[in-house]
Amino acid sequence: MNETIESPAPVREDNGADAARILDMARTRFDATEGAYAGAVTPPEAWHLYKQGCARLVDVRTAPEVRYVGCVPGALHVEWHGADTEHVERFVHDLKAVVRPDETVLLLCRSGVRSHHAARVARNAGYQSVFNVMEGFEGQRNHAQQRGFVDGWRSHGLPWIQD
Image: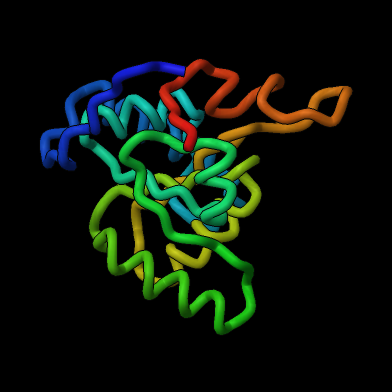
Protein backbone atom coordinates (compact mmCIF):
# COMPACT_ATOMS: atom_id res chain seq x y z
CA MET A 1 0.00 0.00 0.00
CA ASN A 2 1.23 3.50 -0.76
CA GLU A 3 1.80 5.80 2.21
CA THR A 4 0.91 9.21 0.77
CA ILE A 5 -1.47 9.65 -2.09
CA GLU A 6 -2.79 12.95 -3.32
CA SER A 7 -6.46 13.18 -4.18
CA PRO A 8 -7.10 13.41 -7.89
CA ALA A 9 -7.67 16.78 -9.47
CA PRO A 10 -11.24 17.92 -10.08
CA VAL A 11 -12.77 16.71 -13.31
CA ARG A 12 -11.37 18.68 -16.24
CA GLU A 13 -13.08 19.54 -19.49
CA ASP A 14 -9.76 19.03 -21.34
CA ASN A 15 -9.43 15.24 -21.27
CA GLY A 16 -6.15 15.05 -23.14
CA ALA A 17 -5.21 12.50 -25.78
CA ASP A 18 -4.62 9.65 -23.30
CA ALA A 19 -8.03 10.01 -21.71
CA ALA A 20 -9.78 10.19 -25.07
CA ARG A 21 -7.91 7.07 -26.23
CA ILE A 22 -8.86 5.19 -23.05
CA LEU A 23 -12.52 6.15 -23.34
CA ASP A 24 -12.56 5.16 -27.01
CA MET A 25 -11.12 1.76 -26.04
CA ALA A 26 -13.66 1.45 -23.22
CA ARG A 27 -16.49 2.07 -25.67
CA THR A 28 -15.22 -0.80 -27.85
CA ARG A 29 -15.96 -3.10 -24.91
CA PHE A 30 -19.63 -2.35 -25.47
CA ASP A 31 -20.40 -6.06 -25.88
CA ALA A 32 -19.25 -6.71 -22.30
CA THR A 33 -21.88 -4.23 -21.14
CA GLU A 34 -24.64 -6.02 -23.05
CA GLY A 35 -25.29 -2.61 -24.60
CA ALA A 36 -26.61 -1.28 -21.30
CA TYR A 37 -24.11 1.55 -20.68
CA ALA A 38 -21.20 3.40 -22.30
CA GLY A 39 -18.47 0.78 -21.86
CA ALA A 40 -15.96 -0.81 -19.53
CA VAL A 41 -12.48 0.18 -18.34
CA THR A 42 -9.68 -1.84 -16.80
CA PRO A 43 -8.49 -0.84 -13.33
CA PRO A 44 -5.30 0.82 -14.71
CA GLU A 45 -7.40 2.75 -17.23
CA ALA A 46 -9.79 3.81 -14.46
CA TRP A 47 -6.91 5.02 -12.30
CA HIS A 48 -5.46 7.04 -15.18
CA LEU A 49 -8.79 8.72 -15.93
CA TYR A 50 -9.44 9.36 -12.25
CA LYS A 51 -6.03 10.75 -11.33
CA GLN A 52 -6.06 13.01 -14.41
CA GLY A 53 -9.42 14.41 -13.32
CA CYS A 54 -11.16 13.15 -16.45
CA ALA A 55 -13.72 10.99 -14.65
CA ARG A 56 -15.37 10.57 -11.29
CA LEU A 57 -14.80 7.24 -9.52
CA VAL A 58 -17.74 5.92 -7.50
CA ASP A 59 -17.35 2.84 -5.29
CA VAL A 60 -20.68 0.99 -5.05
CA ARG A 61 -19.67 -1.55 -2.39
CA THR A 62 -21.14 -1.52 1.10
CA ALA A 63 -19.68 0.72 3.80
CA PRO A 64 -18.13 -2.24 5.69
CA GLU A 65 -16.41 -3.45 2.50
CA VAL A 66 -15.00 -0.01 1.84
CA ARG A 67 -13.85 0.41 5.42
CA TYR A 68 -12.41 -3.02 6.15
CA VAL A 69 -11.30 -4.30 2.73
CA GLY A 70 -9.92 -1.01 1.46
CA CYS A 71 -10.78 1.69 -1.03
CA VAL A 72 -9.35 4.05 -3.61
CA PRO A 73 -8.25 7.30 -1.96
CA GLY A 74 -10.72 10.09 -2.64
CA ALA A 75 -13.24 7.91 -4.47
CA LEU A 76 -16.89 8.73 -3.93
CA HIS A 77 -19.14 6.16 -2.29
CA VAL A 78 -22.73 5.29 -3.23
CA GLU A 79 -23.89 1.85 -2.10
CA TRP A 80 -25.60 -0.54 -4.49
CA HIS A 81 -28.01 -2.84 -2.65
CA GLY A 82 -29.76 -4.55 -5.52
CA ALA A 83 -32.22 -4.04 -8.31
CA ASP A 84 -35.54 -3.87 -6.48
CA THR A 85 -37.42 -0.61 -6.97
CA GLU A 86 -36.71 0.90 -3.55
CA HIS A 87 -32.97 0.19 -3.75
CA VAL A 88 -32.72 1.47 -7.31
CA GLU A 89 -34.49 4.71 -6.40
CA ARG A 90 -32.17 5.19 -3.43
CA PHE A 91 -29.08 4.47 -5.53
CA VAL A 92 -30.10 6.96 -8.23
CA HIS A 93 -30.93 9.60 -5.62
CA ASP A 94 -27.58 9.13 -3.87
CA LEU A 95 -25.65 9.03 -7.16
CA LYS A 96 -27.23 12.29 -8.32
CA ALA A 97 -26.19 13.85 -5.01
CA VAL A 98 -22.48 13.26 -5.77
CA VAL A 99 -22.11 13.28 -9.59
CA ARG A 100 -23.99 14.99 -12.39
CA PRO A 101 -25.46 12.92 -15.23
CA ASP A 102 -23.30 14.82 -17.75
CA GLU A 103 -20.04 13.75 -16.06
CA THR A 104 -17.93 10.72 -16.97
CA VAL A 105 -18.52 8.22 -14.17
CA LEU A 106 -16.58 5.04 -13.38
CA LEU A 107 -18.34 2.54 -11.11
CA LEU A 108 -16.29 0.12 -9.00
CA CYS A 109 -17.35 -2.82 -6.83
CA ARG A 110 -15.63 -5.96 -5.53
CA SER A 111 -15.49 -7.98 -8.75
CA GLY A 112 -17.24 -5.92 -11.45
CA VAL A 113 -20.65 -7.56 -11.10
CA ARG A 114 -22.52 -5.10 -8.85
CA SER A 115 -20.99 -2.15 -10.68
CA HIS A 116 -22.24 -3.67 -13.97
CA HIS A 117 -25.81 -3.65 -12.62
CA ALA A 118 -25.36 -0.19 -11.11
CA ALA A 119 -24.07 1.13 -14.45
CA ARG A 120 -27.19 -0.15 -16.20
CA VAL A 121 -29.38 1.67 -13.71
CA ALA A 122 -27.27 4.84 -13.94
CA ARG A 123 -27.57 4.82 -17.73
CA ASN A 124 -31.34 4.44 -17.47
CA ALA A 125 -31.33 7.39 -15.05
CA GLY A 126 -29.65 9.62 -17.64
CA TYR A 127 -25.92 9.02 -17.14
CA GLN A 128 -24.72 8.79 -20.74
CA SER A 129 -21.02 8.38 -19.96
CA VAL A 130 -21.06 5.74 -17.24
CA PHE A 131 -18.48 2.94 -17.32
CA ASN A 132 -17.97 -0.23 -15.32
CA VAL A 133 -14.52 -0.88 -13.86
CA MET A 134 -13.91 -4.45 -14.96
CA GLU A 135 -12.39 -6.86 -12.42
CA GLY A 136 -13.49 -4.63 -9.53
CA PHE A 137 -11.46 -3.80 -6.44
CA GLU A 138 -10.60 -7.36 -5.42
CA GLY A 139 -11.11 -9.30 -8.64
CA GLN A 140 -11.98 -12.93 -9.17
CA ARG A 141 -11.20 -15.75 -6.77
CA ASN A 142 -8.07 -17.83 -7.25
CA HIS A 143 -7.83 -21.63 -6.85
CA ALA A 144 -7.85 -21.19 -3.04
CA GLN A 145 -11.04 -19.08 -3.25
CA GLN A 146 -9.17 -15.89 -2.32
CA ARG A 147 -9.60 -12.54 -4.01
CA GLY A 148 -6.95 -9.95 -4.75
CA PHE A 149 -4.45 -12.19 -6.51
CA VAL A 150 -5.88 -12.94 -9.97
CA ASP A 151 -7.03 -9.52 -11.12
CA GLY A 152 -8.72 -6.41 -9.77
CA TRP A 153 -7.60 -2.99 -8.57
CA ARG A 154 -5.36 -4.27 -5.79
CA SER A 155 -3.64 -6.96 -7.86
CA HIS A 156 -2.66 -4.29 -10.41
CA GLY A 157 -0.79 -2.50 -7.62
CA LEU A 158 -2.92 0.63 -7.92
CA PRO A 159 -3.23 3.04 -4.97
CA TRP A 160 -5.57 2.05 -2.18
CA ILE A 161 -5.96 2.62 1.54
CA GLN A 162 -7.53 0.67 4.38
CA ASP A 163 -9.04 1.67 7.71
